[in-house]
Length: 239
Ligand SMILES: [Ca+2]
Ligand SMILES: [Ca+2]
Ligand SMILES: [Ca+2]
Ligand SMILES: [Ca+2]
Image: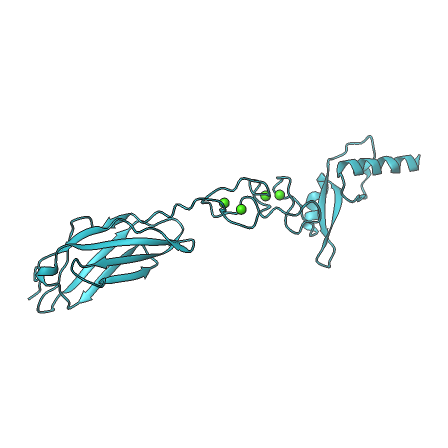
């Protein structure tokens, strides 16, 4: 009778935690005929960096977790975590059931959805150029004074581009050969101040500005090229 009982227990455990090593907890409720909880496989650290799969009643999970054991498939998506003691151990995010090998790679979320080691692979990068805010087209911007008592103060503002790590602001005079501003910036706005300088009246019209964004290692296309004018020289001098 005793042997039969032991055989039945073994048979039950083997079918509950399929393929996993059989572990027989010392619990009387495992006897056939009594209320039997479902069995689960759990990983028990062995002290040498590895862990061993053991089969325990679901009701014991909490106690085992407190003893340092861990669930091989915490998020229940059917894929066991990296380093788990059982299964393929290839779930790169075992807290998110939507992330696992074979999942669809979702573009633009910055996540490796299919656990192939690549983020957003195969996605067509939009790399949109920034949208310009101000100065608006045709805006009249600050100018300085011939007595150098005033500064030129220009404020540029554009829309943030998702994923952009820096921006390139380029401001050019109509007749100039080199840009007056040619800067890489981490913020999506810039205050240009040039103390004591001024723009002579023949050069006040037809300034242009544009911005591009640096995303995932490449520059976007340039934004629209927007035109503005500087106000006539000596407009707002203090003396
Ligand atoms: Ca999982
Ligand atoms: Ca997962
Ligand atoms: Ca991927
Ligand atoms: Ca993705």
